[in-house]
Amino acid sequence: MECLTVKSEVDRLEEDLDGQALVVRLNISDQVGKDFRKEYNLDLVPSFIVFDKYGNESFRKKLRIPQAFEVLELLK
Image (cartoon, rainbow, N blue to C red; front, side):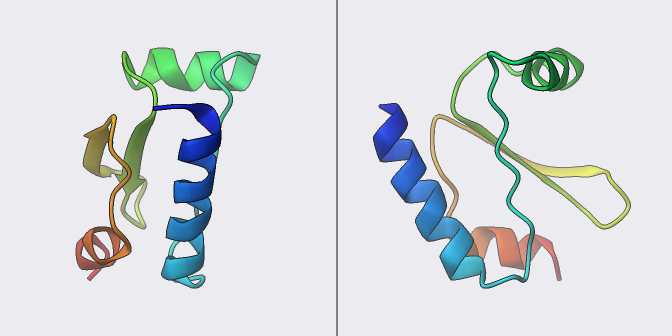
């Protein structure tokens, strides 16, 4: 998946979530992204992780952008 395609799809996801969930984008080339990638064992890009309100991982999807309804269902 190319970066521009991913960006537009993540933009759409963020818009569809309409503030009900926070979307955070990390660049795996900078130090914060590298640290996150190592801590969460991310081997493929793009990867999407949803955390619950307590910071626990509740969903992970690799190489596919989740739909807003998938994310919102997890937050119930």
